[in-house]
Length: 299
Ligand SMILES: [Zn+2]
Image (cartoon, rainbow, N blue to C red; front, side, top):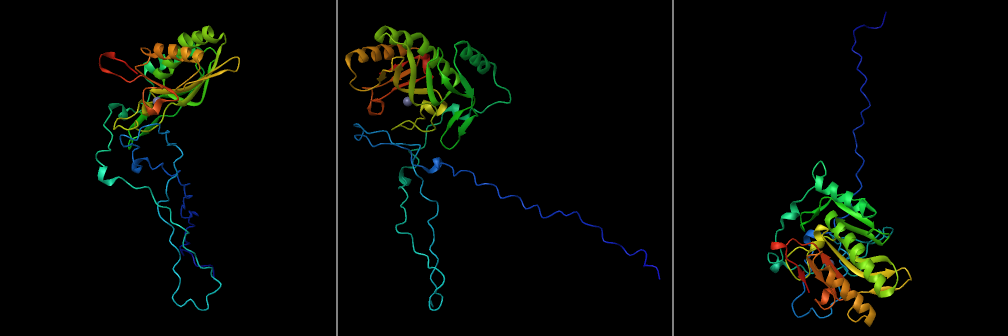
């Protein structure tokens, strides 16, 4: 007998193995910014407080490891290692729950700045001016953190400030601030260094540029949160000399630093440094904070 015709042969199924998606690598644990207590210092504690190292703050583990419960009849099961409770569970930093609302940042319209599909003409023009100034830079991906409010839609990372004046590493700024910093170095700092020390300005050491954090002791976002501020810790000259910003520099350096600081007021809208407050004893803070009537705040 011929084989029975018409017996439906089950169609071969495509070997569609249950599309077990590769477990995605866990994204790096968020820096916990949303629930990190805002760094605020109680008044009166401001004397010579060193700036806390915000970036490297270790985060407490989200969940304390639970020790394996030891069976009640822990008789014969001697092969299984008994989990020991952790020596001392890390204590998470106290959360200022009671002051939660007070610590909320004041809204800043710039927090909503997100990149458009196409880079705006003014950003493109700014980059052209940077190139004309001889600034070496790279584009950086947009930054924003709605929880904190920082945003920088078109950041650049500077390698030089023009005229072979190096800066870095990781000097991430918005383009307008980058341009202001480059012009300031070329027009003001370089000639001032030349006349004060007879040497070329070789590099600038920055203490911070874009940083997603609120301003110390206030509810207002720092200009650093918009890549709109640059902290300068020192200037290094072609003869190897380094002029550090500090509370009591030698006379010749003090004169140079004074000159630079005074000239910064105008090109920058905020200028702070030693003598302004405890947070600025070792660097100049320069920013382009928009103020009504184009005012400046130089202290
Ligand atoms: Zn600053």
